[in-house]
Length: 226
Length: 187
Image (cartoon, rainbow over all chains, first blue to last red; front, side, top):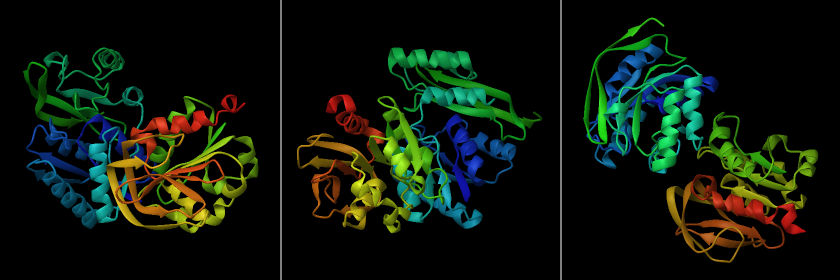
């Protein structure tokens, strides 16, 4: 079963990739680069880092730009998956969807139209357990975007470790935030994971933040030995 | 004990995570569960449980449509059964219904047409199917969307089917099914 992974470079799509690779052959990554920072479909901070992540994973990357207009961006996703079907003979697409029926239904519709399987190995999983799994498996994940009160610039660039999970769970209990950012409260970037042959070292970065919204932008990075 | 039957084909090794585990997570909050693939269900397993939930499966997976002989136990197991999506379609086929093309993917409004133990009124559900079931006269329709039957009950048995996926946005439907047939409530 050859699969392509819809890949944003964040913790969920990276964990979904690892789950998929346990039972099938992952042959490519598929990334949509959205110009719309508000996109409900596609993760935007540090999306360019997916090229380095693909290199670290030794997987080809199908990359497509999209203006990110609601619904129209789905045509771009459809085209990207169709290209992966043609170029890499994938029979299914893996997503990191956990709770969002908005994302999941739209990807299911595209896969259905193209006649490929839609694989959602994290679907409905406990969000805290997913965070804990990434830490236990040795992922190096940083918070690369915050988009909800009371999160602010102090959280940006921080590593997701056991202490961070406790803080995120406490916020979820106090403010109703999704602990893993399912509601778009946080975005993440994975710098290392078990299937990475090399890890990503951030050489230069900047924080752009205003109030409870901000991104940790990786300006320069390279692969280093693990 | 609840038996959750995995309705996924071997062709898709990921169906278990997406369509079975979410049901188990809900059911285990209320009662002990065991999971068996539909090809491994036998008399001993059926005897060991007191209610049964048949899972859904991926859109491309229609393998159980042609394997109804594997499910003849549904007719005389005497246990409460809830079939979800592929589970409902398979129950319907076993009891003489038929499937027809009908695609609904995403949040869908359905309306209850008959009082029942699972839900009431008009509400939104997560649908993920390419086929609808036209149940036989042995079933009464409990709910419909604008396009097809979404819930049914056997007229003389505690055998239910829902075409939508309650484990996604309507977990209370699974909880009510389990609660209605918990032993302490039946005494």
